[in-house]
Length: 243
View 1: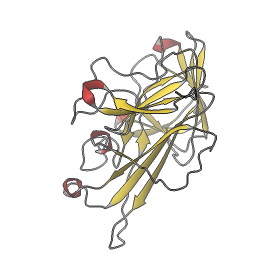
View 2: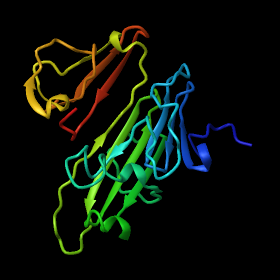
View 3: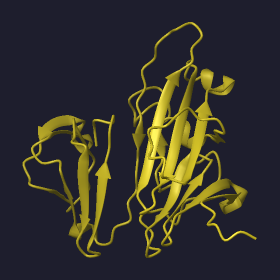
């Protein structure tokens, strides 16, 4: 028997779906389902859940898992001919046993590399060859890092365009006690007003009614403050301009 901590565990989840559990010191953990390449749990050092998953989530393909961090690719909402958020969240990803070198901090021992490649069935609805790679890493202090790479593998050299997003569901308490900082003075598209463009006038984003906005050219750091729980989510990102 070894006393060394198991950082990565492969096991079965809800309805027998394959998942990977990442663990770090001080009880920090994350769970990743191969279905959708989707993070469904992220817990801090106190064992508190930081992501929201709906009680109505079915965990039954081909329905997407409602909550966590769905991967939206190669389409967002109704911007193309595919289903609203693309098909990546409805596919079973594979564990990439030979990933390319990653810029992720090599001190991270709790990580998994996933890959999704084109299928002949997908080629019928989106005629492009690609591989989509995702590294999910849990840092020693409990930070969660997702790193994605999209590669064009068309044999004819034909280019393609795509959209990509992490559609993260954070667990908060009273939504009226939540504010988002870092988006002030930026332009945004309001999807409740047919995507019309406006400029944010408030010092912080608060929630008194339904909100569905895409902020453009956002900074590398955004903060979500949950006053009731006295918790702040700090989001840092690179390469994804909008929020």
